[in-house]
Image (cartoon, rainbow, N blue to C red; front, top):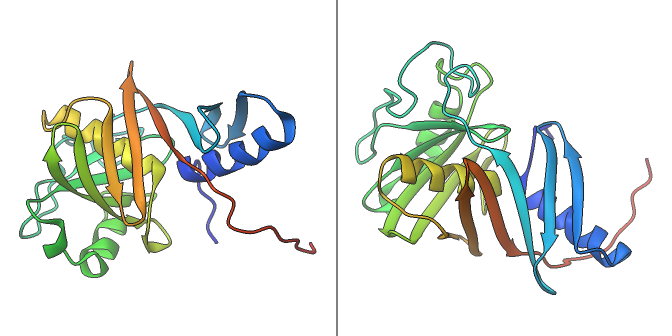
Length: 203
C-alpha cells in the first residue's frame, strides 16, 4: 500500500494494543506527521489528539494560493470544497443528501485534481444537526473506505469554519461513529477499537 503521514483510526488501534500490553492509560506515538497523543478512556474507547489543523494553502498543500475554504471544484449537489491539512491533505464537500453522490465517479477526479500536488483525501458530508454529521470518504491512493479518522476531524473543522456544526460532533460512518472535539485548532478523536484477529507474518 501507500505510505501516509498519519492515520487516526490506525493510531487508535495501535494505542489499544500498547495499552493492553503495558497497562498504561496514556501514550505517545511518533508518526510522519509528528507525535500523536493517545489516551485510554475506558475498556473499548481510545482518544487520540491528531494535532493542529491548517487551511493555509501551502501547508495543505495546494498548487496555487487560492481561498482554501472555497476550492473551485464544481459538481452538481455539492458545495465548493474546503481544503484542510491534519498531517495529511483533505478536501471536504457538503451536500443535502449524501446518498445521491457517487463517490466512485467524483472521488478519483478530486483526488487527482491539479490543485493537489500530493493528491488529497475526499470527504462528502451531510449535516444532520449542529452535533451530528454523516460522512463518506474516498481515501487518497485507496478509494472508498468505511472510515477515516483524520477525515472525520477535518470534516468537523471544515463544518465549523462554515458555521454548519458546533463542537463535540458525532461523525456517523458506515460501521459506527467517531466523536470529534476541536480544541485550540487541534483535533481530538474518540472512538472504539476492537481486536478483529491475531496473526503473524514472516518478513
